[in-house]
Image (cartoon, rainbow, N blue to C red; front, side, top):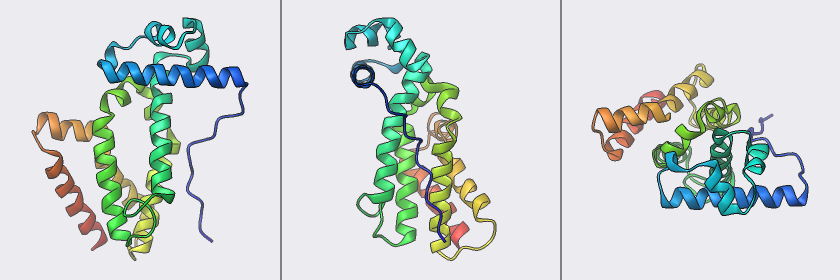
Length: 195
């Protein structure tokens, strides 16, 4: 019997006005991030752009980190949907090795692109076990399909670890690696694990 992949937890139903405010706040924050550095976006600016009071932002998201994590949550839901039912090779329909390599490339590019947002979300995002659980379970499923034996959870975790933002940042910013070099290295690691 196969296990279902854990998705990010669905939000409990909210009042219509609360849902509308949430969407306006997330849109306002995304628009602001599109025009300036993430570190420059304040709760006051988000509230003003959304046409609500600053207190509404804090009640809805708790903190600036909570707001940034909510923005990442939206991106993560879209990515998970692409993995589960999107077009191949990231989604179903491609051979497992192609899917695994597409997964790695997708995560590397997403984490580098969203790096400032991930850092702004801080511990609120880092401790999001639904995200980690989904990625590890997906890689484990692909390793199983590839006939890999051994402790698949550990092997999947080992393959996911180099895709984390701190590792990627070190490779890009300190080691001067290009994204292509990182992808080549991760592909080599995958082939060594798969055999």
